[in-house]
Length: 490
Ligand code: NAD
Image (cartoon, rainbow, N blue to C red; front, side):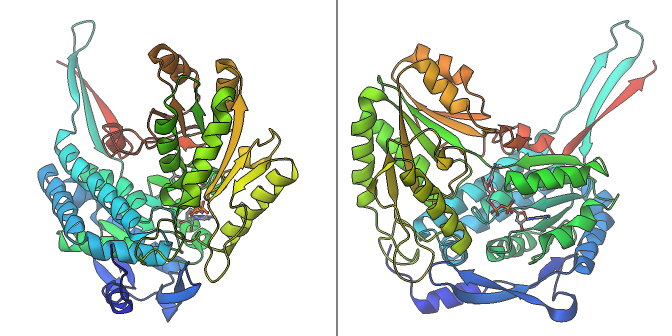
């Protein structure tokens, strides 16, 4: 990829709507308020977008409620075809969408493109699922009467997404909701509203009727979404974000007994056993750690390596990390972009300082990078002590802490020693061990001899405090369907 010019950057920003999308119309926020979108590689403002008020949010829910019945009755094939057309448009515009995403989120353009491809695949997948919503018909056990089971859309759904995957976290919710026949109010993260606005434009072009998807961008999430969660017309809340905010939203949702899906934080262990292929494990570790600059809920947060391999693993990781090129994501050859903001960078720095103070040895990195933007040096910490905070907390940055273990039981116990349970990675050449360990891991997903698990055809989600519900796979559409049973008297 060659460096993207400033005029190309300006063009992609100019092409995006900056207003709210409500009831099929683009409109300014009430009172004309706007919020600034920042480029994390410079700290400069890229543009301003509408800053929704609670009144705007209510108008968005009004619009979603108004067309719910009509949308539910829309032929499934047509719902699927809208998604299919949007999938194709996203693919066609991947280059521009990638530049836009990089500008607001920071990751290198090649990674933004990978996310856009992943994001679009949810539309292709759910286009195919839309026509496979099935119920059942059975003879009652006593032979008298019949049992009819049908699936119906849940109804108007509220959606809240984080900044780290600005498009994929949206398509993972919008895809199944469109397929199932639900209408939506979507609120993207305030740091990255542009990718979601561009997505809404694409869905509009693809023929999604007005009111089915409503997008509100806002700097005050709680005050715009709170009243919607409390509104009895809303039927579902699907949230991706931190466990801390998710917990609050579950409490708020209890009032209306909303259907709730929660994709929350993670603290993924990456286990390397002494029978693993070391080079394969390092390749997988680099992906699991460095994808999205370490800012992924699935990022390997800690590496537990069999004692005989621990030193060699740490050295190889340090070698690979040293070679990575940091920089603005639109510059040629850049592999690591900035963190999302200064708060995130400070949090990473505090965790690294705590580990070093307690005895961890930095092999490479260990501090923020000089200059503008929120860059942090790719870091490897060896011999990390068990009481280091970064083994317990989500790092969300390019930092790889390494701990040695002596036995399989110790490795499983260490992996599970966290309140989170999203994903774990495991490298071993022994099939029996692989299955034993997989069964012992308290996570919703496992990467077995591979450093990435995300796949639109698979059920993505966590256990413990990483949340509940699944996105993607056949399970993904169930989150947007209710089951109705009819007792038939024959
Ligand atoms: P966050 O929880 O701070 O914010 C997520 C979203 O919630 C944003 O849109 C934000 O504006 C909104 N929000 C914040 N407070 C709110 C409130 N009181 N009411 C309503 N909405 C509110 O998370 P983040 O910093 O944007 O994202 C990072 C977190 O997301 C990490 O913990 C990461 O692990 C998690 N994440 C999880 C998954 C998953 O699938 N499990 C995927 C991506 C990210």
